[in-house]
Image (cartoon, rainbow, N blue to C red; front, side):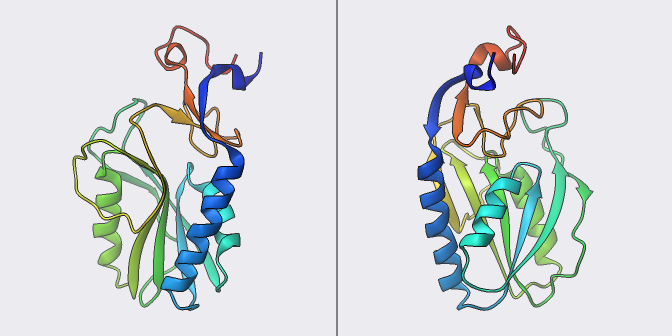
Length: 187
């Protein structure tokens, strides 16, 4: 059995993802005027997106990462954000773009924006591959959006369920029986 069998439907195919990421990279390069930009990837989900986005920016790019937890072992945010890995270097005076796989409740991103603003970046923007279209617990401004999506349980291209499905080359809607525990995820 293949992990593809757990996908109800493909929401965004690989070619569409790559075309939109190229557009986002060009927009970021324009907005920063070709100045160096620091992409801060939120681990683990944003890794694939960040790698492709970095290659799409025609300007000097630095990379750093943060790991945060707001879900624990549940499917919904618990409202508490914990920093599991902080940035390696200072961001003072740098043009920073936080790169996230998906914006859902807004709680994690709101927390990160407040935290990083205190560190004095020259600019601080948010780039999200996916923007779930549903009411948010916190209002945040997302400067660069790859795709607005329906309120569905999506996986692939870095997004996971129980650490699986990140390696899918597309964004797919996971079959409910997989995440509701009626089927052994991934096979």
